[in-house]
Length: 125
Image (cartoon, rainbow, N blue to C red; front, side, top):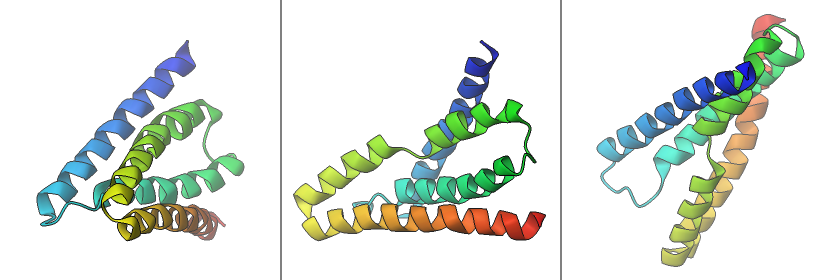
């Protein structure tokens, strides 16, 4: 029961941060046809997840926090369903924009997982 509570707390924080990021990008973007807010949230989440991946593998983070951070926070901050819906909408309007969104999310986020892990190794080694 305690783990469910931890996941819920992390998810609440992650979802609200994602919502905040999306609204910030909507406010500053003149042309919001490209889902840059979701891309940014996914990229930020992947960078932080890579960092956490290394911290967690070195046991620097108590296992107590793992469900809260990895399942709750990162699960709610990064969102595959929103990415998929945005991609389908873009593909229907502009095939090239849809592909750009797909490849940006996949390539940048995979790279940022590696960068986050690399930075954490450098900082804590």
